[in-house]
Amino acid sequence: MMNNSQYLSSHPQRPSLFTRIMIILAMFVVIQLPPEVLALIKYIKNNVWLTSVSVVGYFALFGVIIFGTWRLYRRYREIPVRPGIFIADIGIVITGYLAIFGGQIVFGILNQLFFNQSQTANNQVIESMMKDNSVILIALSISAIFLTPFAEELIFRGLITNLFFKVNTFWPKVILSGFIFSLGHVSTNIVSFLVYFYMGAVLAFIYVKTGRIRISIMLHMVNNAVAIAEMLILLQK
Image 1 (tube, rainbow, N blue to C red):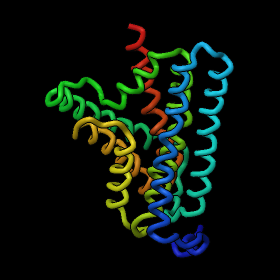
Image 2: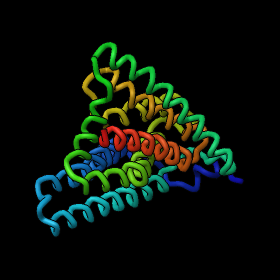
Image 3: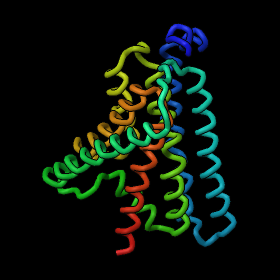
Image 4: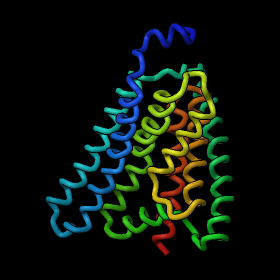
């Protein structure tokens, strides 16, 4: 097993601070593009050919994003991967989900109490898109569970925690990851912002602690799967 110094010596040095900021800024902008492509379907819903092109483009764009961020992640990864078995990873995912779920309950109560909102603005936008068109509903459900977690974890956990602060720094990485992650989601008030900050911080805590990006991806998948299932149930009422 490589020690930290051996691990770091096998990876290229970080680029300049300006370049690192530009990388994150570019990724932050790019990850906002797939929903915009999918939203075009509601304007061309009577054209099967254009709808098909939009759906293919939507998933292809996700593929490009995941491929590109994975290469950047592998290039600049500094946080050492701590060994662990898959069963232990499942236990961490369950614990992490319970932590996120508990936080969502608390913030949900606060959001209702202070702002009279039963759900976050981000979820309202997603639900509105799903109502527009059955094609959007299916594509969005699939991507939210299987693609978004890969893309967002590679960007907001994999890149941000490895590109900023020293390798052995812990809390600043977690806080920065949670903050930028929340900026990438629609928020109309401080509680809504804290919902995603908290979720991003929990995911970052787990990744920085273990160095195993697969755990945060699995946890993100579970969280999104539950959220999508709840939305689908509400849409049937």
